[in-house]
Length: 88
Figure 1: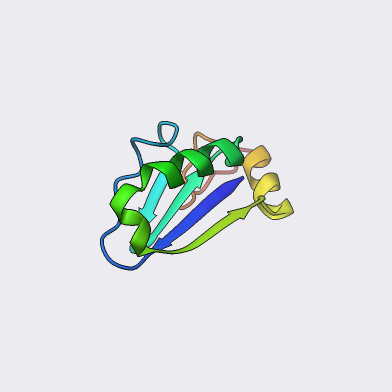
Figure 2: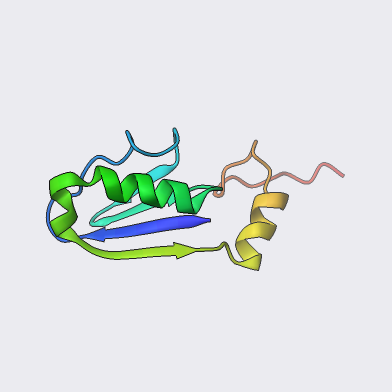
């Protein structure tokens, strides 16, 4: 599952409120990967404090079939730009 928050103005540091390594910030968007979206969303919203006035959007989404497939089949030892040599 993924929570996405969109802010107008400064983006608050939400890493302190979410599980370690789960937060990605790109411009005004903050993505949080979690297996417990209800709890994490409630914690984030409660912790926004004065930044809540800058919140413009909140989306909770399930991963697509393609995303699930890539997570299951991706080799963690190779990067997306790295090619695997055929040794056969």
